[in-house]
Amino acid sequence: MENYSADVVVVGCGIAGLSAAMTAAEHGARVAILERAPFDERGGNTRYTESFWRMKSETAVSDDFEERFAANAGGYPDPGILQDAVRDWDNQPAVLRSLGMVDPGFVATLAEEAPKALGWLKSFGVKFDFLPLYFLSQSTTRMGPIGGGLALVEALAGAAEKLSEQITFYYETAARDLITDDSGRICGIKAIGKGNRPIHFHGQAVVLASGGFEGNPEMLSHYVGAQAQFIRPVARGGHYNRGEGIRMALAAGAAPCGDFGSFHAQPVDPRAADWEPVVLNYSYGLLVNRNGRRFTDEGPAMVDATYEAVTREIMAQPEGLAFAVFDAGLDDVDNWQATVRSRVPPHEAASLAELAALMGVDGDQLAATVAAFNAACPSAADFDPMQPDGLATVDLEPRKSNWARPLVQPPFRAWPMICSNCFTFGGVKVDYNARVINAEGDAIPGLYAAGEVVGLYYRTYTGATSVMRGAVTGRLAGADAARQGNAPN
Image (cartoon, rainbow, N blue to C red; front, top):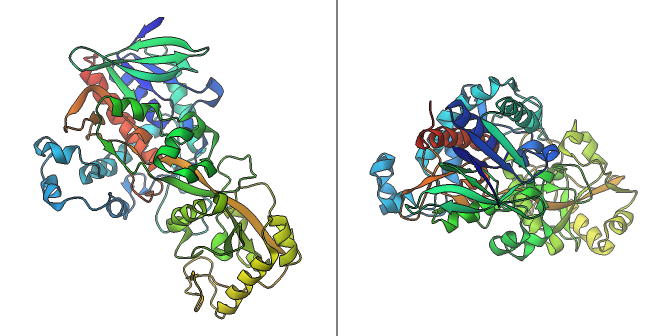
């Protein structure tokens, strides 16, 4: 049995874990960072994301920030309990502190701390800007680091490596269980190193920043259901996120928070080996399933605000598969290529019958679907791909609300699409210092959560806030863990 000690033990090496580790070190703590991945793949999901932040400037979040969180705060909570949310945290009743819903005070903390976190990241040499992304137009404001999430990982990990007397990395090391002392305080981690080697890490505080459970098919089947077999992580980093951090916290009595039955969904090309090979041009064409039938409104509103709901409909189809079908009219949309990140060419044919054969769907049914759609389309004179144009089908179910134009001109093209899992929503409740809260509404001494381990989203992802959440909660956790561990300041 190997034993190591530190003031703060951090599980995970993405934006949340690195932010926690560097902040704890800035407060004088000695830190151990456990990372399941090897050195070359460190960084979890952060490494592979473009890391957009829902901000209108470097000093302010978007105008719709709190509004969008409020719209997805979790079911229909009891108003008799919610009325006490006007109190400060310490004076709220325990039943409210542990309630499985998004705390508006926590959202306000995110909004307040995000600009500080961005400024802090800039101090490590990261630059932010309003960068192009795979949406041709947007319904909100987004900024991102130049170089994406990889730039964040390399900047913070590089800075941590220079503090080798304070911060130690343990790669290919997976956390398995919490260590608890006789007083109920969390004081370490039981882990497994390469070769199934048991290792104990002892510390005065533990920060769980090990991601969600998008890489764990057992947990996905349990929480999401049988269709989970047809989804996969959106990028390689998600395969390392297997839910142990969430399981450990729940086993220690943590209050659950976030939607365990849901996740951030993106439509991707299942043939592509690229990370995040999204196909987001579908609003200009048709979506059909393996049976050649339409199943959803392809153009309910702006794609950046609706693609997640559409992607969930794809997951519900037979074998979790759909096809985005177009005619030559797709080329009327300037720069549509930016909306497709798959480098695998689409199926392409001179006729719908030939296209159906390439897709592996019934040709007669696809032809009937397209014919019914074409007959329901209005005049396309007012087609505007950059905003909802009101070109809706008539007397067709399901309706297409915008961008409805007949598919009549070859070549015909189709991209296969599946639902990918960017990250899961279910996690644990934390307070405004990222301390994990138990089912009785009390902080669990010595235990913190950051990033995806923190339950925050219900039903629909509030876009461009996940890496922001990781940086903010990581910094909050690292600072408080160092203070509570009595490390020198």
